[in-house]
Image (cartoon, rainbow, N blue to C red; front, side, top):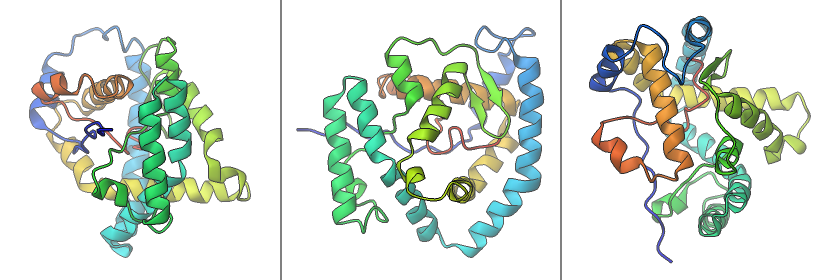
Length: 252
């Protein structure tokens, strides 16, 4: 079978998009963001947390660990989560995509040193990400309005429920002591934040209104992922940038 084209990893900042989002913002919150006033307060809290905690820690992490080590850590976390992504594709009625997940998992397990090296991507196997938010959307559950969560960042009521469900679905959490979950989760967040240090900082400098930029990028990215990339070509024409690993892990 022909593998579908993989969704590309994009950087997080582009000046034209941020300016357009800011200039088009209305005096009243858009329909997707009726809680904007409260959301901006939580967003400001997350920005402070990122500035005074996450950035210093991630900068030290980036200094100590070379790029290949950070990539290997990210690959490991993605690999152990692949069976859950396969299950989501089955629940969404996507057996071909589930088969691709199986191919990716086996290839990286056997030839990628247990997932440390992403040999599947090197061979052109697409990497897709699925979660409970996407599965519930396929089942017809409405997302609800945009909301900014403390610590976790951009989401929706459906996405918040999905985030909680996904946290219980991580396979490795059932094989390690409960307190180790804080270490593994923290390591994953810090590692991802270190990978995107420059991109996030650039987007903050370029954005006319960084809150609007993050909100619109998150909502567009979720729409794209739920549609399995079917809206990607249209989004490319509008020069929108998508989050990938950093979707819900950026405290901003």
